[in-house]
Image (cartoon, rainbow, N blue to C red; front, side):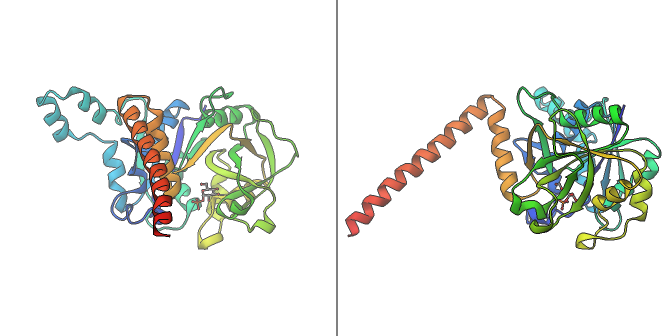
Length: 313
Ligand code: G1P
């Protein structure tokens, strides 16, 4: 089974500025937990035992979050705040080991993954891009899309990529795949015949986008090492996958669920609100009531605006 995952977190997060100027974008919260904690939870559910964060000098806040903070813990303990104490201890646990390796130059996603090579060596491994939170649909065939990718790897022994359809005018934001067969099935991955990073709409082979969850056979390393800079002047993981496909099959599995892009402002706002509403606790109920009062207020505002316009006339 796949036990190791790489999570690249060295990016600047320019789409989330100014919030990401001095805080890692992965540390922005969804409700009361940072985005990265949801991704680590996803790893745990998929049976991952070792996560390698590819980080940089400005991202120490992520490593600190998964470390202990004895001063804070002592203070909470002596104040008898045991519930809070357990929430600050929660990110560190024995089920998963978190290591960090530095990407000293911002040379792109492909280069970031390559930074983990010496730790992983010749075993297959997973990659999770932390801008995206992925969830299965209720009643989906699997509880965790990452676990499903891992299971498909076990069946095929070939690299796996999670994909989902996107709007035709958005294909230039993603890696886009071309499938070898014209039929997809929801619970079985199928081989690719091509992949291209951020194509123009007219050139896109399909509207099936790479979501940000992968499993790689160790054959990928050689291709990452030999990939030159591509789109945006960066060493693209997508380009390494394309050359890997010349030597071995690569499969794509359609996501049977939802992906939430927390790396852009609108996606983040939506994910934040959805996460609070999903909690089904007291705070969530109060928040729901607040949202309803806001929408009532805006209805009321609309009708009083229309009165004032008539009065003015
Ligand atoms: C990266 C990958 C792209 C993928 C996307 C998913 O792009 O290069 O292939 O579709 O993540 O979020 P980025 O969003 O880092 O530009």
